[in-house]
Image 1 (cartoon, rainbow, N blue to C red):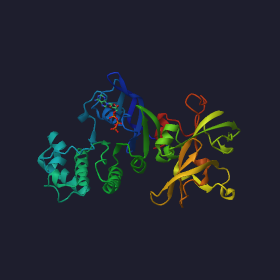
Image 2: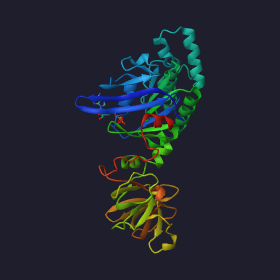
Image 3: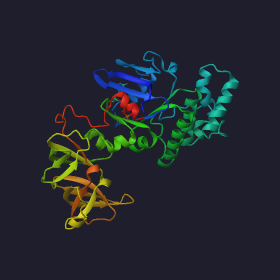
Length: 383
Ligand SMILES: Nc1ncnc2c1ncn2[C@@H]1O[C@H](COP(=O)(O)OP(=O)(O)OP(=O)(O)O)[C@@H](O)[C@H]1O
């Protein structure tokens, strides 16, 4: 299903002095969609959000809402509301005054403000706290007030800049669900900046992964998790183990040659745009199975086998995590039981959990991994 774009960023670039921070960003967001902007520190997430909000003027490109170019409009004329990480509540104002602040700026009559504030308090579970000042609230309550202030002006687009990062882990989980449920209920379009992968996964309809001011991949949580288009995205989505291999395309399979760190193996290409030669193989610790070196009977068929030696084991909860020396590399692999240090093992990785990429410059030029097109239409279709 392809949805018409509601918010559209076209070829947007932003530079601070000689430094390009956003480089030709193309992004189309459907009405009611919840999009997470995900990326490591300094990749340009906040700059993109502030460009959409109107606080940063792009040096090139446009921002439009419902087909209307808003690139030159001031922030308060864009129908958007921004919620910050720091809440930015007025400390001397009560909860009610903070929530009603935007309406007061818009010269709404007092009764209308009181009505809307009461609605917001009920919606956000703040009833009874109207006369308190921010200092008399918990972090979660303060964040709900900030959300109430943003929603009170009835924005079409809600922009969230790491709104949960000041909350402790447990409250964060509940506020996460509250924000998502509210966004769904109100049918509001939301863009959420975060560097927390799990937060993006559980909250968003679509995740946009930024790398050095460019979109590395945009897709549903399931797409970016299971079909990363690059080694960078795979690593960012948790496939942090990396091994160098060599292989050749043989029909619909990629035949991995036996090497110093691996046994030979053929994996289905499944549309992967691979060329003969060296590849980087990435996989998650939880996707690998550890088998004692002498126990050939328990090596699952069709898996990539990496002989190794246990360096250490730790218990993060639910399983044992092992650091395993594989040739000159160390990979992490989980198992339900602990292996002893120095034990000889085989790290077995099933083909569907193995992400293979030719090194940059070696990819087949014309090949495109099915379902990985990043043009606008398919981005929206993934919504
Ligand atoms: N006003 C500014 N002047 C100069 N450089 C800036 C300015 N604002 C941001 N930058 C630089 O632009 C780059 C992107 O910053 P941005 O805040 O968008 O990153 P981010 O992905 O949101 O990072 P974080 O997760 O750390 O907040 C960084 O290198 C930053 O130092």
